Length: 470
Image (cartoon, rainbow, N blue to C red; front, side, top):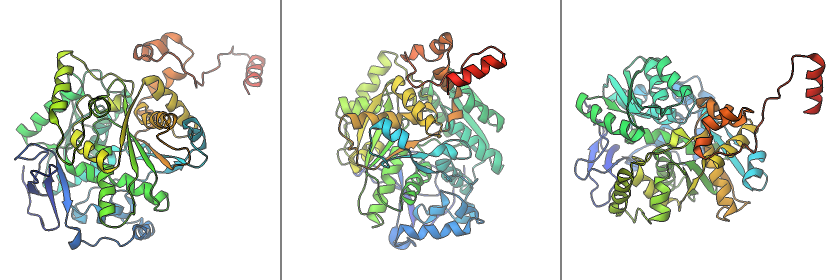
């Protein structure tokens, strides 16, 4: 794959480990440091770049929505991710997502009125937050002349990559999925958009290993969140949250923890904004694992793994992964989008937890689905993984970690129709269907179910049913 010359005095890739700090040109295709094997950041020479003096200056771009970069909720903030030439940007109008206060969900969590907000990333073109990062990674791929792009996916990344390839006609999408580990709602997108779909025997972690090997061997551009440009796009979710809050910093950001790209990018966003003097403080971060895929929770809360100012004890991670292998343990949760045992952004996330004074929690599938039902009743249907943020916020509120008067933003990462099977099973009156889809995952009840009322095809009977249930 070819590379291009770039202005390394303005932006470059750098190893995240302080003891290493090796740098690379932004025109190179890399997912790790040659010297120590660690992940990479995109770093900017802010002193040489035209950075706004106030975040409020970005509001003027709303008046120029006929321009593609201003219409995008990612590239509208180009000055804060200036690695790409604006002429090379590939956008499909991603990032036009709402932040909404929810009294119903706030009451469920235990917050005072007006203090709980839902950032609904399901409104992106492919239905999930992945489009924020995909436009950035895809733009970089286009800049360096890539003809094929690949990913491993539990569903949302593949849908996003396939969409960008389909709409732009710039490259072919090659996606890797595990056997039985993807919802039809997501798989249908990748197939419909024409992606070459490779299904292997194994789970996401197996697919991730293979796609990295294949990308290296065949020179295919890898767009998973191990790609540092992906995270540049995802950090704009925080810019939009701030914009919706009149540029006021919330007290908490609560996000599901899967491959840990979002949490890593959010921390990078606030670190840079604080460094530039554009915010006066950094919110706290809560990352919520599903109990059936709780690697981060286990390592951080039970085994004490920390970033430790760039000196994490990797033996803790290695020991835990060896235990998973010895016991043949696979991630297993109804929240398929975060069904990951080996998150590729683990060390970046540890750094983010240190930066944002973060905490990690795990929630059961039962807690996730109950929270999901509450989100649905607020009018913002989400996929199960998204609801982990709400379930986690409720847990932290009950523990007294979150105060009811604090301002909390829960990230809803994907649309309800990404996984309609779980939704219908939760609300069904068919016990066999409930047990088939949810019972095996430890879900024993549907406390907030909205079951269809069965009635004979008779006018009077239907009238009586409506009157009884109104």
